[in-house]
Length: 150
Image (cartoon, rainbow, N blue to C red; front, side):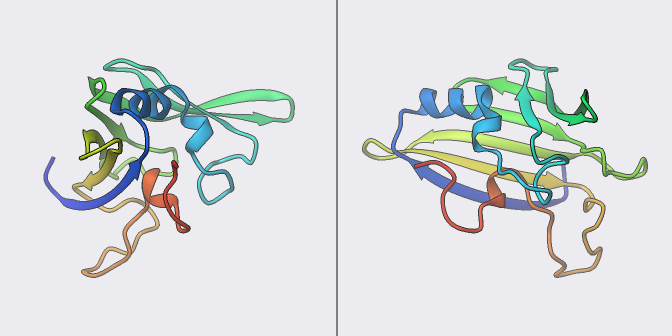
């Protein structure tokens, strides 16, 4: 996919396969809470671990669960790489999907590195559409106060 690219990296003191497993099997554990990052305060994030699998957020509304699809897995290559076609519910019908690519690389020594790249052919809804405008933030980029995983 051609277009703009935002990249973020973090290093964690775990083996690459362990980091991949936590990232893909426990997205609710690391995905930040709050209305800035989720549709509901007590929502639950889930990722189906396969090509075609859905990234979903389940929100409880008045005692009933509503599941929102945020994206679909397009590349599943454990423990090296995950790519998701990202299309949250706040996208307009005319907005293109964006692509979130997460790679899990070995670093020298006991640390592993996770890099998330958020690539888009058009900016997401709510983002300014002019040169130098702010870019929408992906799951790993949401952390304003340091690494997401220690």
